Image 1 (cartoon, rainbow, N blue to C red):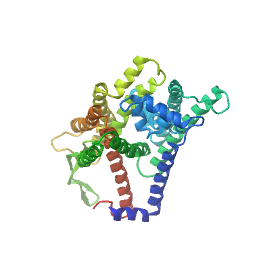
Image 2 (image 1 turned 30 degrees about the vertical axis):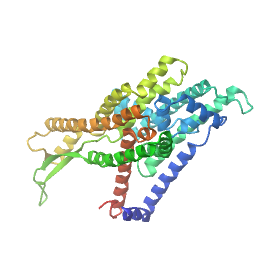
Image 3 (image 1 turned 135 degrees about the vertical axis):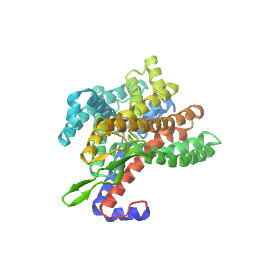
Image 4 (image 1 turned 180 degrees about the vertical axis):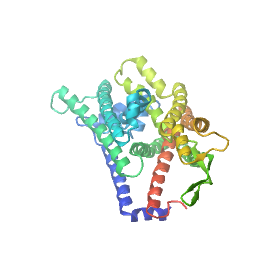
Length: 426
């Protein structure tokens, strides 16, 4: 692996992508510590600690913002407005025919959908910014220390947070287009990793068994990672036979190949999408900090048995939904027919498409259930132990971290092999 990393830095183009990705992630983390103008940082941290315990909806949102929300930093809105916008746009493509057709228009259609996603992100970021102003004012924090009218202070703070959300969206897109890996996933990865040192420190100080709990949790995570990798790499191989045909004076075809169907085609997307939807009620609840039933609903959806049940259902739903978006059995069957390929024992055309769809449906279910179980079980353990490391190292966090790491390594390997270098692993 070390030799592969050295080779990656020998290639000028690849070296530039790695440095750009690392630099943008560092820039993002710096923004998570840069306070919004007019925020008294010490008072803000104290108010947050007094009003958000480890299991509250607010604490969960803060975890995925990398602690930026508790400091009310420039990037306190996090990546969630952008993710929520992507979820809405993908669902609308399945519901609204014109958007579905636009998505099939190639690069020009994707540019239009990306533009609509950006507009929706700005709208959601505006709502969130106003909501957070309401929330933190309800904590009793005085923001009128800038010597200017209170209304203008509100505008400055809201605009700063909206600008922060736009910058995060831009950073994610730049990483995806010009760096290594998926920008959105890498930003979430950076947020989760940034919270681990604090979680370990708090767990150690919380009880006399804190160090032992940290060691046990780390060992369990190390043991689970190979299982996650095994499931992520797992695939069902459908045998494909190619008919013999004469092209010029050469005999072509006749060989046997296979069509690989991944157990987890959707990757970490179902986890991210499910998390975004489950935290949405908490984001709405900040508009009504004094309405008890709204807070109760938001906390129930963000933690507890309601959250666990909804997490399982949403992860399974998004696993099927996203797989259907990225894998088209009809198109695959049509391509096989055009190339002279067929599945032994299955008639070409619609029968082949139905067979491939059946296989996809069958292999997607165990992968989705595995992801759902791994996401929910640590949350159940945390509800009994209230240990910060269990929360920070929860199943959702592990799945995202491992999935993002594998996706980034795969992209790095493909780039190395494209330049005739050996991959990271032999």
